[in-house]
Amino acid sequence: MAIMRCIEVHPNREMTVDEFKAWLRRFDADHDGRISHEELKDALGSLRVWFGWWKARQGMKEADCNHDGQIENAKEIEKLVNYAQQRLHLKIYQSDW
Image 1: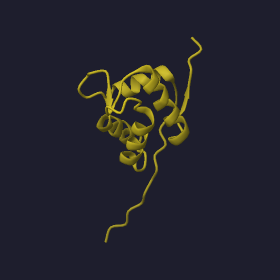
Image 2 (image 1 turned 90 degrees about the vertical axis):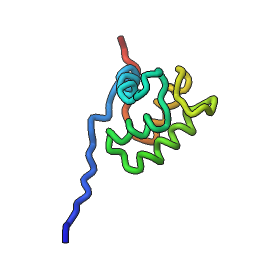
Image 3 (image 1 turned 135 degrees about the vertical axis):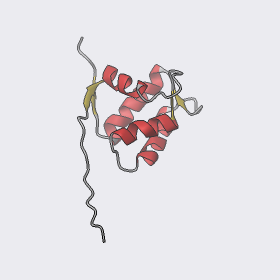
Image 4 (image 1 turned 30 degrees about the horizontal axis):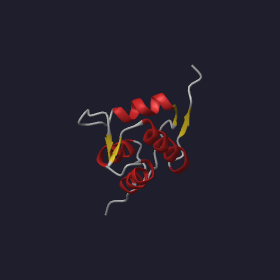
């Protein structure tokens, strides 16, 4: 009988808005400049967020203003940043540069 332990990994969760955007771009699999639900799910999975599939769906609901299934413009990115700060407890701040 195998004994399993659940260990929650807390990666560095503090970044600027530009770093957050660059981090998201890493998961833009089709390189179209937009983030789909699947790509957002992969991004949250890389953070080892519990129930990442559900949180990706909720993030998409909050951020996708035109309901096309893509995060694609500045307003939607801003809403996704707000979601990440409030619901995922990421510390995302404006760069002073």
